[in-house]
Image 1 (cartoon, one colour):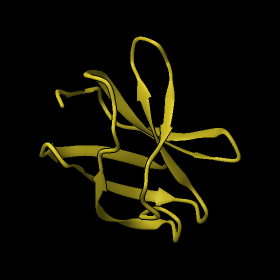
Image 2 (cartoon, helix red, strand yellow):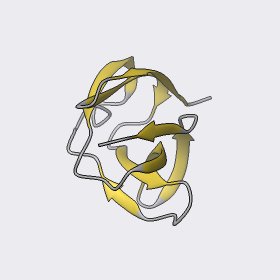
Image 3 (cartoon, one colour):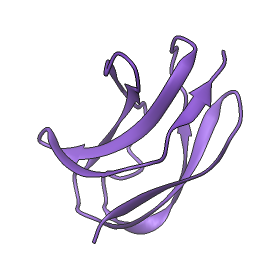
Length: 86
């Protein structure tokens, strides 16, 4: 079963681990309140499989977000909610 786990973050990036991700998956930051999606500037999941990655935080409004792994717009996995304060 695919999984995407939040590990930690800095003001510049979010650290995640992932397992069983299918190839060609992509990541988006999702605003918990507005549901606005911002593509992650990272191809970390494009090869799929298992691993860990540092995902750069794009220019986002302050708020609650989660990272969503998807392929062709279909849900694969997501992290818990985290806060962006920049």
